[in-house]
Length: 198
Image (cartoon, rainbow, N blue to C red; front, side):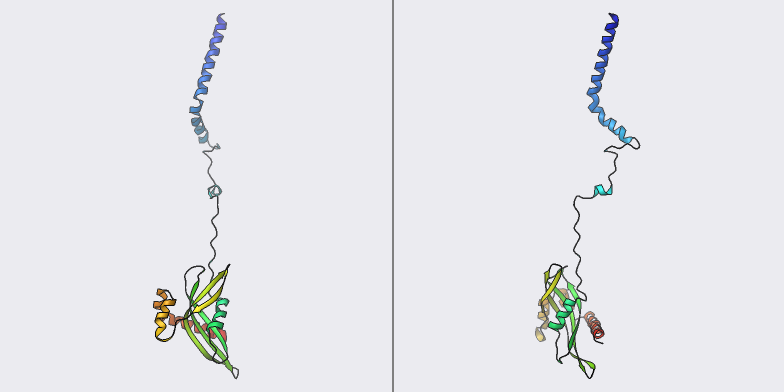
């Protein structure tokens, strides 16, 4: 009888101890996880270091549209030779230009300094004919990644020159367009034309 009572008491004690551990388990679980995470080589959610790939955003940044260069454009050169240059001796017109200013990657207007010179041939020798040097504004129309020229504006001659210059060009260009800097540009443009002719 005594032995049976002792066995019952031992079972009761073990049952109470097991219930106490079960009740305390939610409170000690974080401490156990921290202990596991501390061990070298342990792989838990706290010990995993994110890779650069994991840190990338879910979306990709769009690639910016490359800016179109207007330098040495055949579209512009052809337009200038056919629409701006003049033929006084039934010769061929050659044009060169500098881009003075662009307002945005795909502008509606493009501001140029233009030199056009006619050359005609006589006795197998080329002579300069009618020429002009002028600042002008080209009107552009965009179609996909390309553009077409729909027209141009040139300052008026004589007393109306200054007023028309200011109406066509941005203020910073209108103020400096007749400066020594542009005189040097004209010399460079003349050399470009000469090199294309001779």
